[in-house]
Amino acid sequence: MAKQVPQITRIEAAQAKARFTEIIRRVTEDGEYIVIERDGTPVLGILDADELEDYLDLHDEALQEQIRQGYREYQAGRARPVERVLAQARRLAKQR
Image (cartoon, rainbow, N blue to C red; front, side):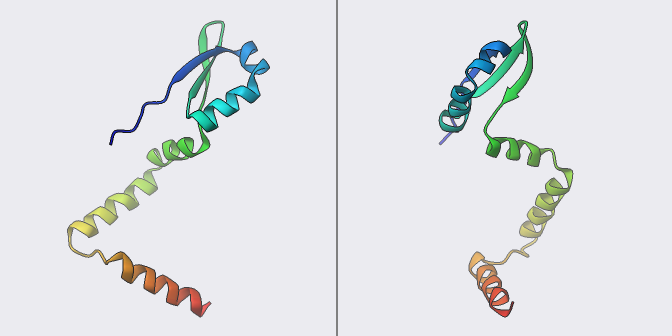
């Protein structure tokens, strides 16, 4: 199933200041993106914190390399079933 594209709304800065609580609700509950403009020029974008984290992860080269390395290991057959990984994690947690 395809991910729904969020609605993007443009709001002037003065209007955004007056309606900030509403903007927070629209972003967090409705998944809307808000573009704040000053004199018709976009100056700020507001999105949900989880989406911001995803965006930052996409630009984290160290994380991207870890993902590529994990995929290479998977392709080479060095992956372990999740059940074994979880069992090992539980054993290690009990030892602490």
